[in-house]
Image 1 (spheres, rainbow, N blue to C red):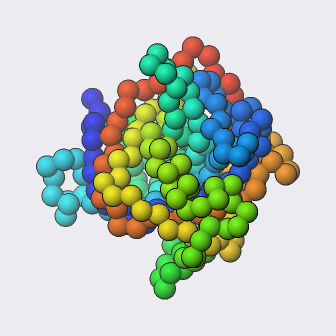
Image 2 (cartoon, rainbow, N blue to C red; image 1 turned 135 degrees about the horizontal axis):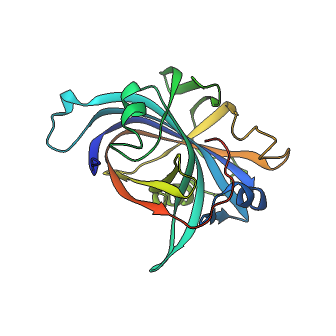
Length: 249
């Protein structure tokens, strides 16, 4: 049995976004997913999210749990009997919470890996670093609030970027079974993003030349969300007949 819904508050969510060669992304995506593109580029990145008060409906917020979490994600489309869908494919989730690693993929969708997070924030600046216990994931983002997106962003405006990521609320995560993906939808009860200037960004996933050759990945923009009431809703797992090899499990 799985818990179908949990709710809480997103205290801080940073979306670090890259433009990636669409052909390269297509090679690392498992079936049935294909890259969702903007201006000819695939969009991928890292979501760094601090959650608080996470609990099932009916449980007081004071009894909820808090955690730092990271998800590497790729914007995707896939076909269903009722037509195309869009969302994100998540090859890897990391968390500071021992509870998340225990219940993720069991009581609630999404296999999580344990990681150490170092966070500094204040005065409009944000620095989030993580290193996973298994040595697979390393991420660093250091930046500050900004008045606008970078001038070379493929989105062109904050409004366009906001709409793109709001539509990508449904994510399917890699599991221990290559042909099965856990479905989880983020329902933000309010939606507002702010531009974040990034002074330094690192990701072991996107810097891995075995999957992303030099020149295939470029930083595009970063967005910040704060103090968002939300729900996580479980979806039925997506099961497919064939898969392609996917990295970073």
